[in-house]
Image 1: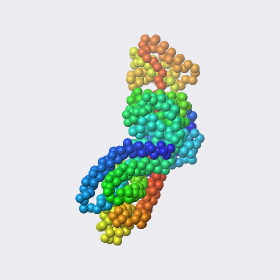
Image 2: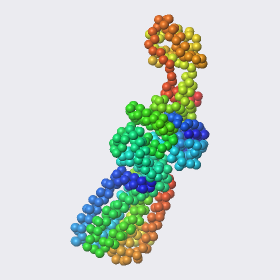
Image 3: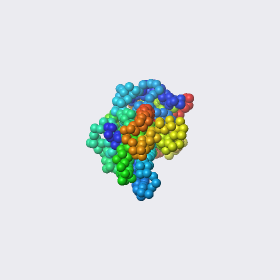
Image 4: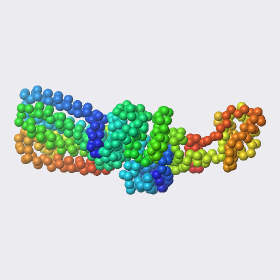
Length: 317
Length: 252
């Protein structure tokens, strides 16, 4: 759906915002585009939606070259820009009708607008002025506006920025349902790594304009934490350290930041490896008379992956 | 599509850019002017045609000031409110966007000109020049309104803050008005006379004076038209050039 090849963006002042970016986003993917501030995320989105021209490289959206077919691409995409502005003197319905007219050359689509208002939960406020809307409502209206031309892809730049936890969850659910029901590809940037973890099936991490990671979340979890890791809390964590180090296929055992025991196992390929290892550990604890309070498989969060990826990049440099 | 855009721009000028308030203020100012003029007209040392010309100049000035403020904030306010990006992401061309903003502001200017006509009639009542003054105001005012709005919208594309855009537009208005207001002084020198011949406002005032005070036929005064038309052409060229430069530049 989206493919970029060696895309570069150098601004007039010489700032190299994007450096040889190669992206591949598939049909109906929810693609998370991550990076610290100033990593080139907004510049990339603006190049993908045609607002900025790349200094070099090739961008194809739905098979169309963005430089040769900008109008076709504008009709195919919807965008919720960062710090989205609204015509506060319009009502929600007027706002959607206005953008609908711009895309459809005046052809009315009242039923579709009604459907959009219902989908984003604003049908009961459709005749209220936008100036009376909360931030979350405005953001949902922005998403409805991005869908007004029935796009195949939507780009969202920090869609949950400044929203309270309820607002964040509403946007997450809305985006998930859009993706599942309408099969729309979603390209999202966010500093809320939990959003990314919940929503995205693929992510990429950029730093200083360069791509440093790309793949599915399980792939990245595997890359940054190979093998299995178990976290457990017992009645005698310190004593258990020595006992567990004797178990075969355990690579290392240490105390975590919160005093819990962290057990890193060798990469096991045989079936039920994790279950067998868990049984062995429980058996050792029982024979030593140590009570287990909790035991669980540890997975890297998106936050861990992000920090590790960006930190490793720093260390390499 | 263009109807939708013009309608939106017109409504935006009225409601968002305080256009409604400006139109109302203009009506109040004209009402005060009319009351004052009607009450002193009998005893005034000024000829009635002179009073009529002052009223026409006041109408021009108020119309252009309001149009300039609205035109100069048209694109800048989109950038300041972060709504520009959404507009640029639609299939609407930059030229179409510029045209719709231009027409939207123009409609407000036309509305002010229309509103001011009854006041002009009230001021000119009892003279034989009511019809002529209305025609002259609409004709000259129309051409100058087209020009000034074009300049203001162009500045709003080029500048990044509404303050800079509005101030520059008003400065242009003052510069263009100045020779017309100082014609007596400027006629004393060769450069001044050249300036007066080039200046659209000075020509407009001369035309008004010739028709209303000297009672010469309008068609004989068409000699004053070229400067107005040239000013209009320059303003349009400036707007077309700026229209191609519509961008996100300056968005917060």
